[in-house]
Amino acid sequence: MQDRAVAAGRLLPEPITRVLRQPARRLATLLQAPQPTPPPPPELDIPPLRAIPSEPIPIDVPPLPEGRKALTVWPDTPPPGYLGQLEPENQKRLAERWAGVTLEDCHFYHRSALPDGRVIEGAWNLIGGESAYLGGVALGGRRVLELGPASGWLSVWMEQQGASVVGFDLGWDVPPDLIPLQHFDLDTMRAEHISFATHVQNAWWFLQREYGLTAQAVYGSIYDLPADIGRYDVSVFGSILLHLRDPFQALHEAAKRTDEAIIVVEPLRHDPSQVDQPVLVWNITRGASPNGWWGLSPGVIVDMLKVLGFPNATVTYHRQPYRPENNPVEGATSLVNYTVVARRR
Ligand SMILES: C[S@@+](CC[C@H](N)C(=O)[O-])C[C@H]1O[C@@H](n2cnc3c(N)ncnc32)[C@H](O)[C@@H]1O
Image (tube, helix red, strand yellow):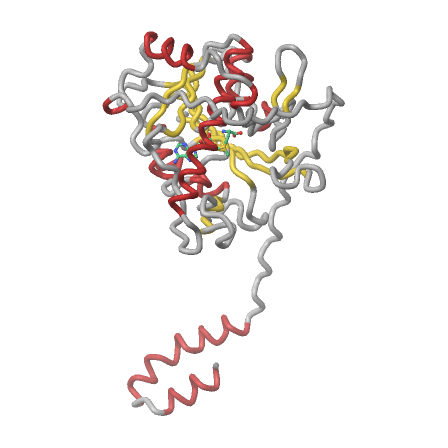
């Protein structure tokens, strides 16, 4: 490169080469100087998987009897603007609609223990790992907005810690975000997804009823939360941002209503040299699934939350047992997640 620069320099008029000589020499010295080796990436502090206690053999969710459809309790039309959902009357009405929910109506995303000692299998086993999953935040006496609670094991656990929980999930006329990958029949997938979400929401209400809890449920669009959803001390985004087309808008909506802290949990998909960088990896399954929008580094979450007024952040790593739904026995493994806890002060 240096030789080529010298050759090019010979073609220039003398007054110009005179001016360029000094900076060119400096540049040559810099290029010849040994380059400092970048520091090794920081080691991540990932504790080993906790001991999983032997527990009763999980029971299977029985199939729906022939000809019976799963309970679908979403009202036919949502309330205008999704308003008024936290009115006690409305919560009572929802609980009444779900009062008869049976195990057959449910799909459990989380392994869930029932008050009578039975355990129901689910893809993620957070039992015993809840505190690490939620970044160790003390939740007693806190008003918590849980975005995307799925079958609700964390809602149960947080209420048991003394939190008052509002679970927010997809409204019944809000389709899930799917990457418009042309090789999928997206209309069919959307319909399947909504049916699946119904079974998962049934499980949320099933656990509420079995434990006699008081968590409230609100539905709608995560990009435009119901105007009367209220204020919260803590908002929780557990493994949801990767499924959203616009994670920043979802964080923004919650940030506007959160006074103390936002907790974000995501799967760890970056190597140690990238975790502090603001990195988003697009279409994480490379087209195998239309709902894996992003691989978000801890750094990008910290960055986004700082912009949204939560500058005081910590990042922790943890392992959780995971059994893929399509191969629960041979595929059983544990996966590393990270948790960002970002506070206003
Ligand atoms: C992977 S589950 C996470 C469950 C739980 N938060 C946890 O950490 O174990 C994703 C949740 O996000 C919800 N969700 C997915 N896409 C959504 C969207 N566009 N708007 C609102 N909720 C959504 C799902 O219905 C589900 O409750």
